[in-house]
Image 1: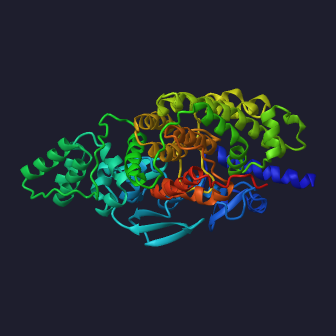
Image 2: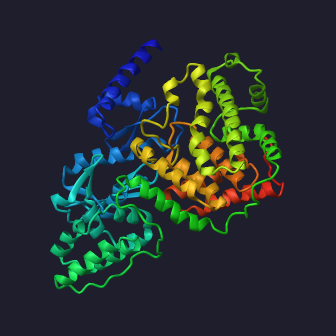
Image 3: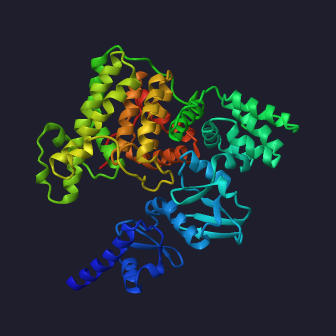
Length: 517
């Protein structure tokens, strides 16, 4: 057994060398046959396509998608670079999505190449790569981002299909908002004689409130002798004025998503009862639900907790060292952190019920919730004190989700924009639904985002006079699937309906939230 462990350690060291070099797409000849077969057998490698592999964790369940979704973009970049050198480029539509920081894993990645075979390459978890034989943009219209070759932003706006504007309004509006001046697209429109495209872009810019750019396009094209007819390629108009000075694509993306989704929420959520007059009674109601809420919320996140453990943690009759194994230790620490965070959330609700702006309260207090949630881990020596310092400093991937949350830089741009939207929102139902969704969409912390999102949801519920609402474990699949639909397809209706049903049950006294251990 000891010799076997030593051999596996040697193979893991060979794998570590590749990872330290930044290699994600591992070719078969990058490892010896012995190392490769040993790593495959022990679950540290997974074959993507013949001769190509990615690193995985041996404790991943069969069919688990997280490792593949996390590796998707760097794998495709490495694979395509090896296969085609510099003679390839992602489609203009996919280029626009990436320019606007939409890193959602597509079901099929469309790649242009001069020597393509119009071939579909099957990839794990029902994803694929389709390379089509098509002309590439000029070198001046090609940019590289994270190893991926893209159409430049102006070139992609000109080359993308007309239907893309209406099918992906958030991405295209965010892309349009990144254009500072008509000169960025006019040269290409004039050189190519693209009068029809010019009319479409002029209408698109006017749709997002960039009338100066729209006028410059139409006037310049007409002055050059082109018959241009302006048309709006979007299905809906938009009253949101997007900043012309915004440096981050994430900010306009968050603002666009909020505007697009809030209209879908209207009429699908119970009418707000209005803030309660009996503040002490409301806070006691919240306190009374603690055991049930902790059981369900922690269970949704995969912790194994009992009502007996939750009660002991609340009473203080608890010592993490009493647990007989590491798993029990972690469950107990999570339960203690949940209790401490719950008390901080109750204090935030008190502020809201006293008349403070709910968005401002959340902005001020959410860091405290997070610190309380994970302080027991620091005390036990499992986390460093610096882990409580603020938002995450690296990438994070959501288990089983095709949505890729913003980069660490994107989080620091997106969170202030999110709190501005929450602070300015007047509809309590929108604050509830989009407050929860947008927080987990951004995923600002390495861990605890789901619990934090449900806490935020309940503070927003209090701001409208709705009762504290528990998301029961039995609804986990529908709840997670609805979040995925909103994150990947920008369809907020399933998530709205999911929360509306739970809130309605609470209003009618029909909520079934007793722990079922």
